[in-house]
Structure formats: C-alpha cells, structure tokens
Amino acid sequence: MKKITFLFLLLANFMFAQTGSVDVSELSDVASVDVLANFGGNFDFYPAADQGNDIWTFDFSTSTDGTNEYLWRVTFVDNSTDQEAMASKVAGKGLDNDIALASDFNTDYNSYCNRIMTIGGEDQLFYFNSFRIPGVDYTELVVNGTSGNFHYMRYSVNEFNEFGGPGCIDNGDGTHTALVRQDIAFEYLWNNDNTSVEEDLLDCVNDGVQINTDNQNYANRIHAAGVADNDIFDECPQPLSIDEFEANFVSAYPNPTQSVWNFKTNYQIINVIQIIDIQGRIVLENNPRSTEVIIDANSLPSGIYFSRIYTSEGTNEIKLIKH
Image (cartoon, rainbow, N blue to C red):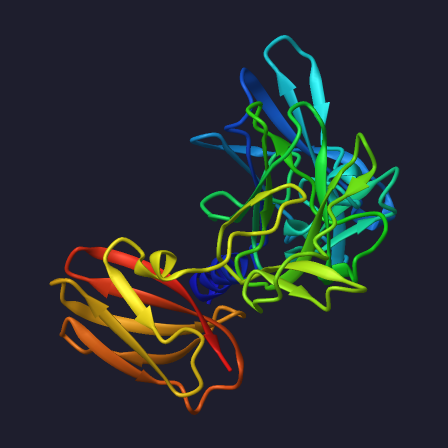
C-alpha cells in the first residue's frame, strides 16, 4: 500500500506540474534568476532553477490560487539586478504590442505589466522582458523611413487606435522592423513618431492585395497572415505585374481570376500546390507532379489568397486575387 501511495504521489506531481520558464540568452553574465509572484495575493521573490542553456524555470503548481501574476528578475555576476518592466512593450507603439495579444497578462499600459500563470493551463516560456517565445519565427513588417526616428503602425486589430499598434526596431540603415503574430491579417498605416506624420496613401491604386482605399476617405495597406511586407514610408506599393508573379520560376495567370488559376514553370516539377487564405488556412491543395497545373477557384469566396508551391527546385509563394 505504501508503494502504491508513493507512486500515486509521484504521478500526481508529474501530472500537475506547472512550470514557467525564461530564456536569458539575450543577456550576459547572468548569475541567478528569481520569480516575483503574488502567491496568496502578496508579491515576493522565489528562486528559479537553472536548467542550462540559458533557461531558468519555476514550478507554480504548489500555488493554492487558480492564477498568479508574476515577473522575472535577473541577478548578474556583479550583483546588479534587472527586473522585467514590460508595460511600455505592450502599450501602443510597443515592440511586443501585437505579440503579447497571444498571452495572458495584466497591465494598465503605463506603470505595470505582469504575466499571468493559470494553474492547470499550459507551461510558459518567454524571453526575458518580452512576450516573444523562443523558437517562434514572427512575421516581419519592414518600412524604409527616416533613420534615427521611431516608426510604428496604426492597424485594424485595435481599430486603428490613436495610441498606435506595434512599434519598430530601428535597424540603423533607414529601415525599421515591426514583429507581428503569424496567424493574423489586418490593414495598417505607418507613422513617424518624431514628426507626428502618418503616411497618406489616398492616391494609391485599390488593388485589393496591397492597398484598400476609396481614394477619398481612407487608404490602408493590407497585410496577409504570415506574409512578410517591405514598404517605403508614404509611397504607394508598386503595382503587381506578371514579373512579380513569376516568383523566380513559377508564373500564375490570370490574376485576378473569376474561375481558375493556371500555374506553370519552365521545367521544374510542381509536386504540391496549396492555396491559403489570409487567415493562414489551407483551403485547396493539389499534388500535380507536373510543370503545369490548373486550380479551380470557383468554390472560393472573393478575396486575397496565397499559393505555396513546392517544386523540384524549392518553394515559392505568390499572391492571388479571386473576384
């Protein structure tokens, strides 16, 4: 009976283990890591365990609360410390503004931002002082603007809130990069925070792929889920042409279409072709094993799509329009 009881306790501890982890690989000279958690409603520091490879963990499963707010604190070899302060990162214009929406947190977007661990939920792993998850390739939106100025976007995810959406990292060469989740589509506009100027794209062509505008009251850029964008501040995107549809060696026509798309290569075998909607879902798939294939789009609603084409020479993606 004692052996059975002991085994049950081991299994219970395994089943209900609830770990929070932090990746400190972006820091140097880390000596130890603590978690600042509100067990029983009172915040206090508790030591985390070094798992090696710059990962530190803490087991929340002993908490009697259903949820706990927490932050990480790092102590360096010189005994100095650094505690997470993420309110500015998740607020409008914050670098993690969009990424954080996939996580649980409590914030006033000004003075504090605490992570939330739900007991019985999923284990968590983040980079220190960020809501970025190690190993995840976030979608990059790059704008060529004014070097040394801070750029950010207003976007439809928060209904073009005046306080802004994701902010950019200044790459030092006139380009600025914002990171967003891979599974969302939205419309957006770039802003220069130093000059308080928002780009005006009312003269751009409404192609339904790169620009959505009535040429009178609104003009927004279009971002499709998971697709990296490269823009020039306050300049219209170049109209899509047949050259852009070639994607190195694959052509797609007619585009836009009302019925079918024809895909053709010079000699490369198309092994698999997928049609993906702007939410990132595969809506059609074919395995032609040929240099030419016809995709019937009659069953698809009008809108923007992307084809992912796997050939004997590599993989390509092409923007598509269905009228």
